[in-house]
Image 1: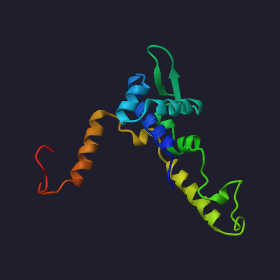
Image 2 (image 1 turned 180 degrees about the horizontal axis):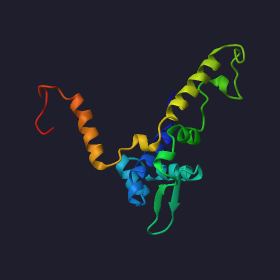
Image 3 (image 1 turned 90 degrees about the vertical axis):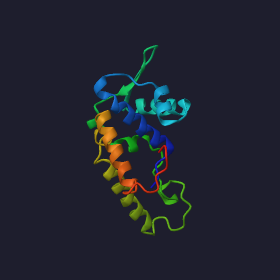
Image 4 (image 1 turned 45 degrees about the vertical axis):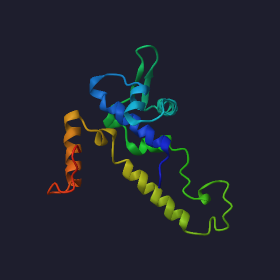
Length: 162
């Protein structure tokens, strides 16, 4: 299963907004676009959709921006994916326009449907609060830990300036 880029960006926007939850500060599309190296125009569409789906509140005006519509612990990742993904048709027979001669007679559709349900079910186990570090210090510790696991133990192979 592969999520669309739109859903990927939606989750990133929500994670960014969740990281500001305790501060009460509004985020701007520009700062999110810069943080993730993505197009502001594309993020405008993503933010609009997240607002329509009830995940974000947007504030217009000079000092406007966006924030989560509810606390991070109350937004499930599976809920976001279901709300943003437009097409969960893993194969042609999942659509009304299926021309597959096996539609209705093979077991593949049932197996894939169960796999999709398991995928979303697993995502429902996690909230934004689960996937966003609670503080900058915690984020740095987690990043250092991840990098330390990838570094050679003896320091061999390291280059100057890295």
